[in-house]
Length: 347
Image (cartoon, rainbow, N blue to C red; front, side, top):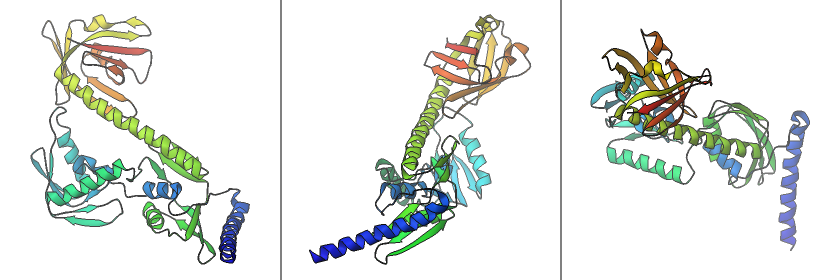
């Protein structure tokens, strides 16, 4: 019993000591940070938001958990590309985007270096070793232990610390994601910490926000992950739309401007979308209007049309929001005037 009282006393001293340390900062900052242990939700959130984000070169390596350390060599749709710096990414993207209904392939040349989510770099000598990295990423994503890239904390931030064993308070100024990851990866079972709120962050859709507690951090992560999922779904819908466009021919079923239908201007034309991002409108009199198109996405899918040398077709030139689509019909709304809508019907 005496031993239990002693342990209880030490624990109370630890709590009061940490509270005192926070109170000193609270007097200046006017905040009330939350206390966390190494296995807390906040510790996991901070670790995952500070992991190395390798998603910027997913078009090259197909893995958001890691990135290829340059220079590297790859065959992109059969074309060998030497990627000496990030400036050469555009060459890869251009080859991949040359056609929108082909099966893209990227074959990496080994050996190469890979930077992992824990910021370490490893040399990979063959496809089997690289597959192991890809599989580890898949497992991390399935178990919710991969990087959270949808919330970017703005640095510097301050972490308040308390060592239970040494009965010692302190603080650490964190100036980068890597420093935060290293700190959170090394918090021991005898340490407590709290974030000195408020902090600022930028979430997936570019929104900047102020976070004032652990609960608000969790809410921001939950909301941003939903936004990220919406953006990912929009990417997939964009690919589906590209396939529908290329595999069919269309006519303008309606072109409404404030309720007035001017689709008759295009009644003789058939629109043919090619997989090289060109679009041709051919009339029953064999006159032709050429243009280009592009499908993009953010939270929604967009179809950009660009025709030249024809005043009537210039009215179609817009970055249209795709409000709905199916295998037979595509509904568009102007991004500059919501009262202007177009419906393309497959023939």
